[in-house]
Length: 403
Image 1 (cartoon, rainbow, N blue to C red):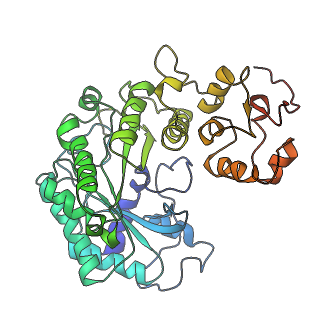
Image 2 (cartoon, helix red, strand yellow):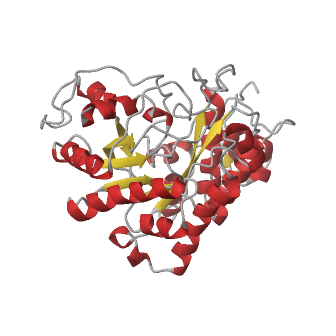
Image 3 (tube, helix red, strand yellow):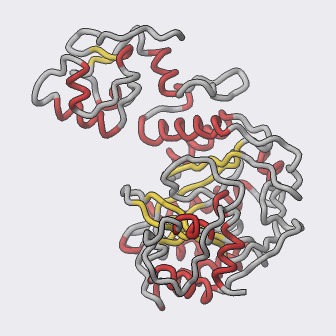
């Protein structure tokens, strides 16, 4: 089987693993069909209006980098064979499906063909687990070493850390990759036992994230790729085993505060044929969206668990943005004076994010903000903020919503 055919086999389920996606659009059940793309085709990616489908068919996805640039990212695996039996996973052991495998040299060479053709600019590389997590991690590391050393690839690499990887392997991966990720999948050991019974939450999954942070704190960043330590992410499967939003977000808050991850991804559960959870209903995508919103409140806005409007069952309301819910409970009777508020106070106002908060602070040096038009001129989103702010001591005019 040639490399292109292998990529196509792997691409059907690549969408199930978020990695720097530019949007939260629901993943399709399978990769869409398109005009076949050959590895010998050296036209640029935008040469044909049909090319995006063809690219996604082999696992190329639009990915937004930490600096905001969007690149075509190849999302793929060294092998779809796996000895673990995670109950939700399309690649679980014993599932009746065709398996494909790349050798490290083959994967590196095949990616470089796509890279030199202008088809892919970065690589997201994961793998099923064969002969244990440490042996699989060795093959992942070998692949990136070939890319960096033999092919002199200096672009973006997002590398998975396998359950059971050793600390020395994690450190070597930190010297090669721009980003590392460890999928926790569940918020705690009890939920993980229901979702992936052969994995160990603390020993195999949380510990590598702890090692990464220890290395970042104790060793100079010059040892990392291009003189920087990689960022880290994780992923949770949402809605498969009865976990609450409170469970998911308690762990997410810990990861942001203690282990300094860059992002938590949330993937709504989708039942797959020939898996133990195939009889369960899919998770509501609105729940995934609220979890994303809340994780950004932790990361960028200074919110914590106590600020969130959990129901008695420990879940977020689906019908309201969590930041807006907090503002309705706390700011209607105590509006924020935009001409005097500190940055953290501004960030609590619906419609004001980190960029617009800084813009407001800078504009106040030039004069007093007196009305909504002043905010609009600064590019501030004013649709939701009017009930919660004062401008030079006065509330903006707004129509009372039917809450």
